[in-house]
Length: 310
Picture 1: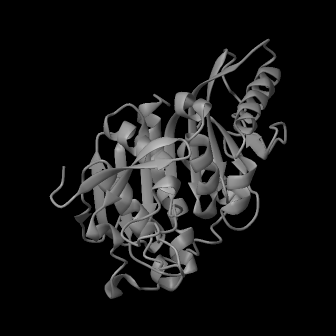
Picture 2 (picture 1 turned 120 degrees about the vertical axis):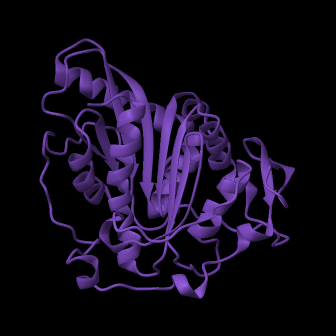
């Protein structure tokens, strides 16, 4: 356990979750990270409006799922098991990076509006995710012309406000048993506890519990953050630090790498087992959108290996 880290119990709606108290968790992004780059400085790429590669090896969007829509490989093997990722918020931006990175899993994209509230509300009842997963399994079976298809690996990813859905799903029995991988792209916020001494343990509990499973190599989790400072609630810098602290670690400083996508500059990182965190400088809209470039890298580097994708 890192020096200065104290884990004390706190009771959340779903059970007992750790309450992380470490002063460095509440450190907001320093002035040096409050940078903005032009499109020219990003190599001519606008991260919020990237070139569209089409659908690659995938069919076009299909509205068969009970929520959202899905893309399926045109040459999906005719077998009873398949892999699927449910992505929340920014489904078209996710699709652009998805088709460049993988060819095999089904991608389900769900957009429910602005803010995390609609995502949180939509998945507050456990049957919603159960019906969603079942509807995808039925749709894939129909597409393949077989009697039944079952999801083998199930992943969740979100950009920005989409984390609201993931928090709900991870707190539910089906989410705990079926979700193998979670990817959070600059999109985990929370309030502060009443004392102001740490972040809200009830909101972050499901994410912290999953991070601990990933650190123990029982699951996979990747979290990225920008250096945007939001008004009145915890930044992704703080929540990422909370997750790192929840697995007994502390972020390590880093220098920018030329390989980072869309003009992003890496400033810190952490890895333990299958839990990974990457933090980047930048405080504007394009820095926020640029995390979709990180998505492509995570799919190629981590998910393909974990799920043994071609």
